[in-house]
Image 1 (cartoon, rainbow, N blue to C red):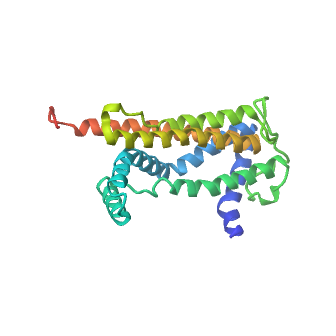
Image 2: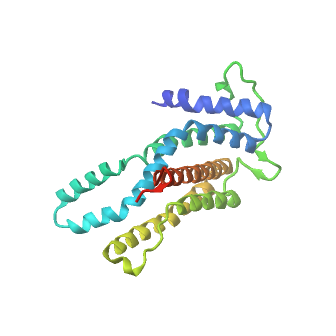
Image 3: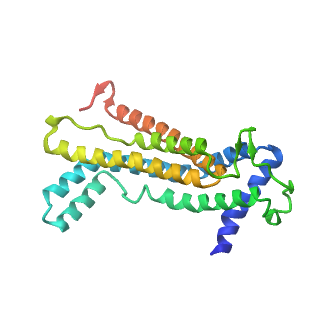
Length: 251
């Protein structure tokens, strides 16, 4: 298993990092380029995940209504839930796939940065990649990407995660919304808790890991947030176009 991990992920990322550093001798800029390349490679799966997460957020009040309506019949709850998923074409596991894919990439990048900033691993270079001898961990003359405990990058990574999570937050419904409003309010409360919990976890990971990894988390999360903005605008535009047919508003 480790051989597959090294061949498919670790060694290509390591060689790509060193090759880019030979062209642009700034580790921070190289991490930016590597992050963009990784995000482009994962763009299709990330898009599906964002759409699935948004769909799950939108149908959450209906899910709560089903649970309350059939609270004494778990089998009926399961049936109605699956029916709701089918009607709205929602895959509840759709948002998990990119996370499962990104975790090995994250681990590979961690080992790559650790090896590079410790001056090792150059024996794994491909024959066509020049050995630079050493890689300077200082980026832009400001950040030592090889050291842990960089609070600035940790805060940036946590802040980017907060902004990304905030896009999925639900506004609290008015009191006049009745029972459905209570369910939506509960959903909003859960989303709000996650909106603060995940940034905290991101901050702690970024603070305890090498600053290069914190920079990657910040850039990766920021690019994902940008992707969400684009997808949300595209989705809203598609909905608006579907509501108007030959100059007439379709109700």
